[in-house]
Each structure stands twice: as C-alpha cells, then as structure tokens.
Amino acid sequence: MKKVFSLVDKKIAPERMADKIKNEVKKYIKRERKKSLPEGADFWDFDCHIGNDEQSTIEIHEKEISKSIDQLLENQTESFYLEIIAKSAKRNKKPKL
Image (cartoon, rainbow, N blue to C red; front, top):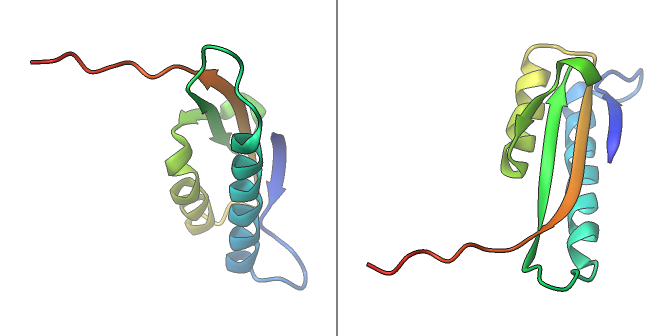
C-alpha cells in the first residue's frame, strides 16, 4: 500500500478521519497476513514508511503506525504519505544458553 491520506474533511472531524485511516491500515495488514506464504517463509513482515510526502518518509515498525498517525494529528498535518510493503520472512532461532 502506497497512499497519501488526508486528515482534513469538510464533514468529518480530524480525529475521526485518523480513526478511519487506522482502521483501513489494520484491515490491509490483516488481509495481507491471510495470503499464503512462499515456501521457506514463516511469517509476513512489513516495511513501513511514513512522512509528510514520499521524499521525506522515515522507516517505522508496523506497531508504531497508529502512534505516528496520532503524532501527525497533534501536529495538525493536513495530509501524509504512508507506505506498507509486505514481505515474507523467516524467524531466527534464539541461541540456547
């Protein structure tokens, strides 16, 4: 998902727009996790980037998406860019002590 989201709407409060965006992101991640994994992969990992525009993004963990949206809302940002790319990954086993 590569998308520019707007937090400003004539009829909807910015807080409700943020909730709507968070719900859309949550549904996208859930949908991606349901896809079958390629051979040799254990789970779906996500590369997430967020910023005011595509050029000024920073990399974040998927669990930080909601916090980042809230922070953008506090800064009264009108719109932001969010990129979530799914990739298959393999778990690393912890060494036994």
